[in-house]
Image 1 (tube, rainbow, N blue to C red):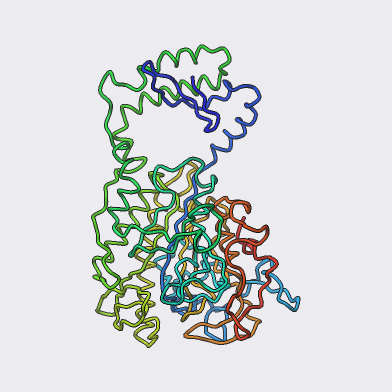
Image 2: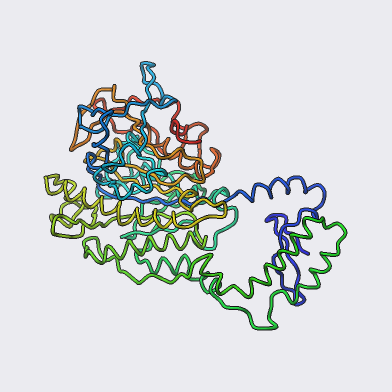
Length: 545
């Protein structure tokens, strides 16, 4: 019998020098290690992996089509934009303004909006997942970023090249997907596949990987991660090496893995130190391995699924916007995510949705996002966000609705159909984030954000939460949005990381300061900047259970 203390694994030796995994038998440990092992074993029985998916869309969002505007009669509407005004204050205040006055957010059950759907974009088709959903208003980037790559994942220091590149004086850092993937709370052992799987309609992603130390800062400390732009290539990278092992048939007679280990098994069984419970556990394990060899071909499709690679789809250039191609591209990406999670080859995924389909009346066409807005036409997502006429507003809302119903909903449905060992669904144990690079026009107040999943039961979900302090004056308006203080987006990032099991030491460079750039850089007197910066490192109020 071999015992590997660092991984708490035990193995039986085969006659030819190989090894076969055995169950963890604490009664055979040195007495000094048994108490800790007993406690760890009990904890392990209740541990189900948490999984993280971050979905990014581009060029803002029609705010009035993202937020609820239809609700039961007990709600009134905000005078400045006609959106639903929430009545129930959160039990914990958001913070204090500079004058010492406390301010709080408000919330409401998302089930109150079930009749009409949460909004035009978040339609009734998403109703089956309202109980695991959180819709946010009032999450504000602190620096005055323009179009950017990494803001929604916490690198708040770099605009796109077309809008200036590195933001003057701002901290540039790794994005939270890499911080999450570095944590033993997410990966107690190295994954079979990539720690972070990047998928998208173009190579450049919203993620920044560390070149060296995880929390180092500066332009030279990070590099922009690259995405797989073909679902088949993504499948091969994540599952290509593991699928043959999972689908290989029964070994030949005489080639059993157990034949050579039987003598070691008998020696372990005869050990007088072996406790009664461990003896039974060992016997059950040997019976299990024997049965497994006879059932492996059939078991593979039940545990990991009878997975096959999706068809190859070329994302093409930014304005290759064929409707069928876009649809197949993102269906393939979602299917790869589901297969990778079900086979547990990776637990952290990003998906950049840089193309979408617009179904307008009797027409359907595709849109692609571009860093440049000077190429006119309905197929340029960025240009239409600038154009902002009646057609543009309608098309952008319909495109976002397509993303919600064809990309996000497909993922949620797939996650909810898989049950984990504790009886809860994979969606219950996951955290799916849908964010954006900016909000209305080029501003970054109330960045459109929603999440699904409970991260294993630690999130208080099923709510629409508005962190905007509507008692503050509207500083100015652009497009369909109002500039008013909400809460620092940094606190949302902290909440995500803690929901995934991380501690402050894993993501903070300076104690109590949270993550990312926290200063309202390049926001002058005309902007909303009256935030409580003493609690910027804390989680959002009333979210974690």
